Image 1 (tube, rainbow, N blue to C red):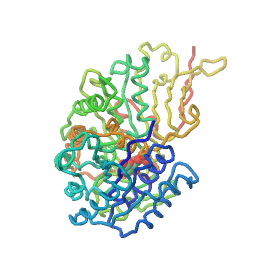
Image 2 (cartoon, rainbow, N blue to C red; image 1 turned 45 degrees about the vertical axis):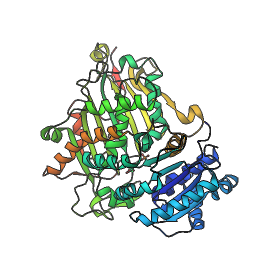
Image 3 (cartoon, rainbow, N blue to C red; image 1 turned 90 degrees about the vertical axis):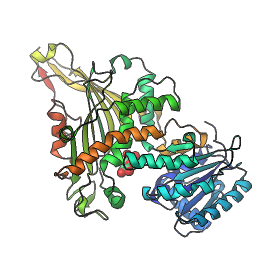
Length: 509
Ligand code: BG6
């Protein structure tokens, strides 16, 4: 990869958590790898009153604490330091934008960026609308100059339902063409998520069996071992369905379920993902009650953290019905997946941090072993581990060495760390680089976000109408018992439920 074109990176919400933990460290790593142009500069924009110097100190501390590589390389840092600036400004005040526009103009000139600008909206979503309304002041409205670009990266959540997503898209399109909009979903920047497409479309062995005829079901788990921490204020307005399912989990689902794209470009790939969302079967209230589960973590302790329960978290309403766990059974009504269920679950304070896709194949057609074994043989699983221990494994049935016919589940395992001897880069490095390079493949298109909300909205509406509260679950468990029942009543089971090892099957052959 070569360094992207020089540009100004303008970060809204520059003193916030996301900028500190992810964006600034990612920009530093890009500089370290020679992927940030030497003339690119960064302007932090937020309400905190900081000088350039103070902001630079904060950035340095962020890189030291959250950077992927240690220690901070002083030579690289010194080169970056003089290209970091800060503007204290109020997001809703037009005069502040005029001041920032003036400063940006000067900096464009002194750094010779040609006027390329990358705006990064890393503020809480409640600020999006007022910033976008003012952004016109920072984007020249006259005819575009050949080769000069203005792009917008916007964080999730992209709206909180279909009408608000449409409204946001409408506002954005007043100042930016769709080719200039980069709706971020950091899961798409994860190596393992990108590898899903390579695995499916660069190998011939999976495609013939990648359908309802050979696959029994797909299960996607995105589990977190901690609670909402200091994000209760945001989270209570959102919940697991909006925070994780509409975006990260649906992206995983789309990459597993989509048809081969016509080409590996942004339009073709995103066209296929949209089709998946459009084919997800809409559910009526009664079906939603049967096919979805909500949970809320109760008091307890796990992973070294204790909690008085979700409703006692800071900035969470004591009567809150917001779910910290969600499980769904979905159907994709198209030729490839007809009749075959997809089970999704995600939650806070679950047994461990783990994101994975399990493609569970059908059992062998002939019950050769079943007849003489004490229990049915294990189904084959293709397990795509998004994190941690990134990799792919295929679970097969193998004979245990010895005189008896004992069967055990064994794994053919590929792990990134063993094969490539390196940890994959952080998702934000890849995504910020792609936005500077103008590649939208790993970003969400307007119609994609809207199609995903079309699936989510009826579920949210049914949950809001329901008299039932989310079921309590104990921190450190795999969520409410109902979520286990959701899959087990179909004669299936989650790959991880209780942590017990799979037994050896003894056969009298
Ligand atoms: C964010 C959610 O998008 O993803 C958080 O808002 C969640 O609630 C986080 O914790 C999980 O990301 P990762 O990369 O740690 O799996």
